[in-house]
Each structure stands twice: as structure tokens, then as C-alpha cells.
Image (cartoon, rainbow over all chains, first blue to last red; front, side, top):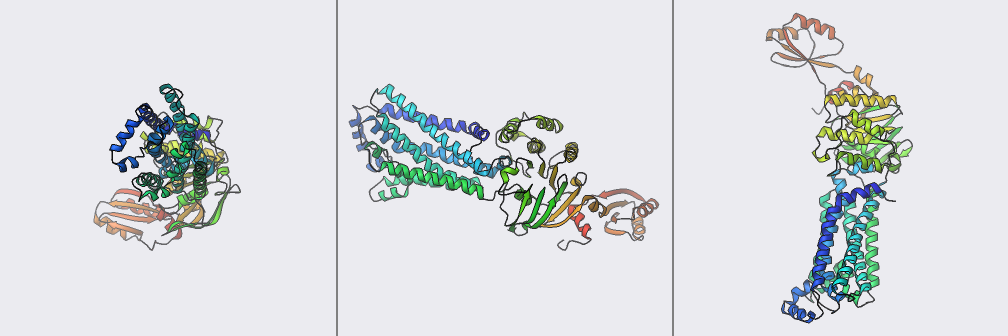
Length: 267
Length: 295
């Protein structure tokens, strides 16, 4: 169902970008994790209270839960995880399909006996597996780092569920980029919408935290469906939110592949 | 082998192709001629299944070009008109990628083509000259020894020696019973290789003819440079068809009166004689024996 030579070429073309983002994600994770100190958590709370509350809310730097996983959920999964992988997906989505079409090299790929569906599906599988691998690495390094710094203090099942949520979130967000990458023949258009919409979601997410009056903005962004705090409190909303994110991703990826298989290509 | 039936893809403003109808039998080398923007590349994109026809269809070996594009690629080799490769690859890496995507077993043809075309596969594609990229494209299109070749302006960017090598390659393919469609905007490029040619203009197929017929209908133009204007005056009296005259230089059109023309020239003070290369427009205007109203 996928074309392995093409898959391997994707690895070759993109591993440097992937390594950079993996490095950034792991670096920030270890910095945040190393800041955790159950004894000083209250003094940190006091420090945050000294800052303008709007700023703190916008950055989602809230500590709802004094446990290690709660600390990570507040500091790392509330903001940083919405930023860096988002940039990664925006850059990569365009490189999956639109770039090849814009550049013209798609002509050579399609002059091999592989259908458009197979080519696009291969790209989709590569894209998603690169994201899953990124999160998988974060899980492994995260658990190892936490266990070495704070033995036995990390709630591993909850930590893994949060990361599963990250995968679901990015399945749907990357689906947006992939959909536009398949739809447009020019990189600039694919980047404008495939990048613009996820970035708008990110900004809406920030704005919705600023004050009560604009909190309704959270209903306009997909990122609301990923709520690490709700995962920790084992809220009933978690499973439906995961399913919704998964379905949105599935629909966008499928639609993208379908459009790519049907459209006129200027090759 | 290749059948095009009432094929229409209309982009408006004389772009695209309108109601094309022609067939290419097995073993034929078919030249597809037309000025830039006439619809050659659109036809080829339709044959490769990159575009959805507005109307009509094209069929290769009884497979629909759009719906069964992937299946067709098993026995078709394609050279795009505007060649763009994947960024940052070496030539050999690119050839390996395409070979692997095709599940190509034998490297024999690939090595042979690299040899004949003197392609340097160790270089980075980005740093290659246009001619070298063209050669790489040709190797990629032909290395799986396809039954059918669809080549969009295959000789553009090639130096004269490589053009010759290309011509002998195509003749070899013909001997092996391959079918070839190659597009071009110049008659000279295809007259030595093709059996038949189709001429397309503003999306309409103007004619499909044997190359020999097209050649026979071709009139030739010569420019004669005389030493002085009195010779020019004398020459004009003989009543040849004068295309233009500019001080001592006269352009004459000669069809079957070449002998008479040469005899006249020997009696006059001639200091130069050149043949005029005919543009494609001229070729088919001559074929129809009418002038282009637009010019």
C-alpha cells in the first residue's frame, strides 16, 4: 500500500528538520522537568501570582496540580507542545505533496507505475509516522529523565495518555496542512492556508486564556480538544475529545488524498 | 497503440486542446509539432493522466490514460518538457529512486544509456547544466526499456553531438519495434527520426501527414547577396518569387525551379548565397499554401 523507495527518500530529505525539532522538544522537556521541586512548588505559585494574571493565563503557566505530571501538564503540555511540533507540521506538510507539484518533480514520481493514491498515501504515512516517532521519543526520554531525577514520582499511565493526546491533536492539525498540500499546486498557497489555519488555532488558544470575556474563543480552536488538565483529572470529556481529533484527522487526510487523486496536475 | 479520440481540454484563450483525433500505431515514430503554447504539452499531460479531459478520451494499449495511469506507466517512458528533479539529490540517487519505484530488475539499459549520453551520475543535480539535466531525464525515461516513449521536446538543451546520439537512439528503438511520440517546435528536429508528424496550432490538430509528404511540400528560401544594385535590378527581371529585398540582399523562394535559379546566379555578380531555415509556421503555412492572416 505504500511505496518504500519513496518513503526512504522522505527520510533522507527530512531527517535534519526532524532531528532539530526532536532536539528542541527534548531540551525544553528536560529544562522544565528539572525545574520541578515539590518543596518549592508553592513558592513558584507565589512568583506566578506576582506576574500579571493575563500574561500567566495566556501562557497557560498554571499549576493546577502539585504532582510531577501536573507540573509537566501545566508548563510543558500547556504551551510548548502546542508551539514546536506545530511549526514542524507546518513546514513538513508543504514538503509532503505541494512542493513536489510546485517544483514539477512530481512528474517523475507519477511516471512510475504507482497511482496517485499510493504516492499520497505514502507521504501521509511518512508524515504521521514522523510525528508519532517524535512523540514516542518524548515519551521514552521523558520517562527516563523523570525516573532518574524523581524516582517513582511520575504517574506513567497519565503521562502516556497525555502524549497520546498530543498524537491525536497533531493527527488533526497535520491533517489540515496535508489537506491543503494536496489541494494546491503551489507551495505558497499550501503554506498560506495549511500553515495559517493551525497558527490561527494556536493564537486563538492563547487569546482565549487572556480573560473571561474572550474565553469563548476556545470553541474556535482545535487545540481546546487537547486538555492535559482534563486528562489528569480523568474527566469524561477526554475520550470524546480524542475521538473527535482522530476523526478530524482521518477525514482531512482521506479528503486530501482523494482530491490529489482527482485533480488536474500542471506537470 | 496510442489512440486519441475527440480529446478536449479547454483553458480558454486558445490554450489547451480542442477535439483532437489521431492514432499512433505500434512501431511508429510520431512527431508532434507545434509552436510554443499550441497544446503539445497539454496533450502529453493528458496522455500521462495528469489532467482530466473535458471531453473525449485517450487510450494507450486499450487502457484509459486517466483512470489507469499507474498501469500504463509500466510500459511507458516519459520525459517532461520542463524537467525538475528532487532537490539536493545526486544524479545516481535520483536514478536509483526511480528504478526502485519501478521495481526495475536490470541495470543494463540504464548503464548503456549513461554511456551513450555521457551522463555524469556522480554530480549533484542542482549544479548540473541544462543539457546534463536533459540527459538525466532521458535516462530516467528510457532505462526500463519501455514499449512506448512519450518525450516532450527531447532534444532541447542537447549539444549537436548529443542530438545526433539521441537520433540514433531513437532509430534503435524503432528497430526494436518501440512506439514513440515526441514533441518539438522545429521541423528539422523531427524530420530525420519521425515517420509521421501531427501539426497542432492553437489547440487544433492542423494535419497529420507522413514526413515525406511534408518534406516534399516544403519550398525553400534562399538569400542572395549581390555585389551591386545593378545586379539586383537584373536579377529581379527573371521573375522569381521575391520574398523581400533589402539593398543588395534578396530573399527568393524556390520550389521546382532550382536549376534555372542557379543558372541565373552564375551569370550575375553574386557574393553570397544562404539557405533560409524555415520556421514551423512557415512549414505548415506552405503546406496549406496560404499566408497567416494574423501576421
